[in-house]
Length: 184
Image (cartoon, rainbow, N blue to C red; front, side, top):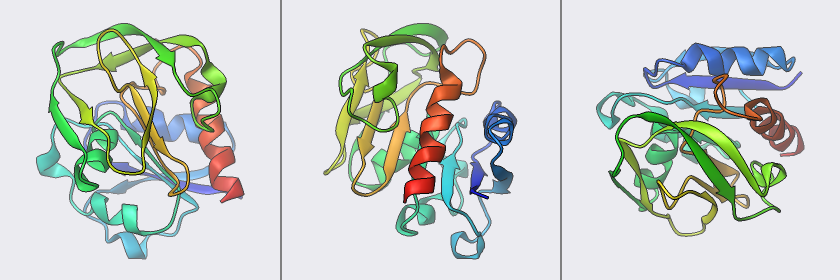
C-alpha cells in the first residue's frame, strides 16, 4: 500500500490533507515537522500549509529524500525558498475563491484540471520567482504562480488548498499525487 506522510507545518487544514489521502485508500499519517526526515518511512510527502516559515522544523530535509513532494500553500513557498526561488508578500492577503488557469495541461499534478478551476487560496505570501528547473503550471489574476512543478525532481506545489470543500476538483489533485508516488 502506498504510504504518504503529511508534514505538519501548523496549518489549520493539515488534518483535512491527511483525510483526503486516507479517503483515497492511502496509508497516511501526520508527522511533526521536527521529526528527522531520514527516520520517516514514506513513498511520498505532503508539506502542509501553515502560518509562517519560522516553524518548519526539519521539513526542508524532505526535499533531499528522492521522494515525490507536494507543497500546499506554505509548503509550496518552502520548496521555492529552499531551492533558490523567491517568496514575497501577496497583493491580496486573505482567503478567497480564485479562478486559476492551468497553463501546462501535461503536468501530472494539475494538468487534468485544465483549462481552469475554482480554488480556495490565501495569498498573504506567495512564490514570486520559480526555482531553477521548475515550470509554472497554473496562474490567476491574483497570483502569477498559483502552481509549479519540477516533474524530473518529483517536486510540486500549489498555492491553493485542494483539501477544502471550497476547492473544485481538489480530490483530483490528491489522486494525481498518489499516482505520481505510485509510479516513482
